Image 1 (cartoon, rainbow, N blue to C red):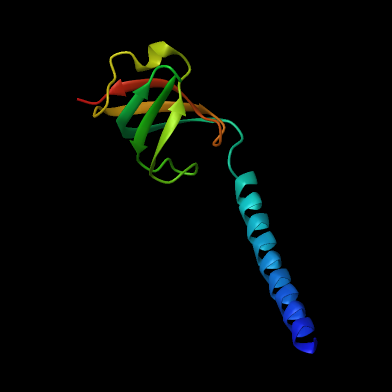
Image 2 (cartoon, rainbow, N blue to C red):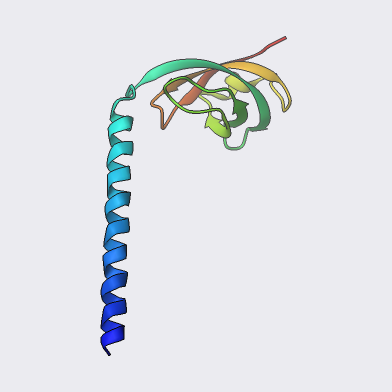
Length: 113
């Protein structure tokens, strides 16, 4: 019984320490997020991976967007269907995002020749 109590106390103690570290990390992430602009406009380059007209989304592999997000592949909603006319998978593009860092929308996209 003593061993079970000791194991329980040790488990709770370690869990509490881990929770404390996670809470501190989340606080740091939140503070960093508060430093980002709430709303903005950014221009970047990328490669179109897919155009999903039924969802009005363009999937891009893009360069780092300074102060907003690292280079990655992700889908972005578009402001309207006209934005992605003439764009297809494999095209190298320059695009403009507008909105918040979390909910940015592509407002313009053009092929790079």
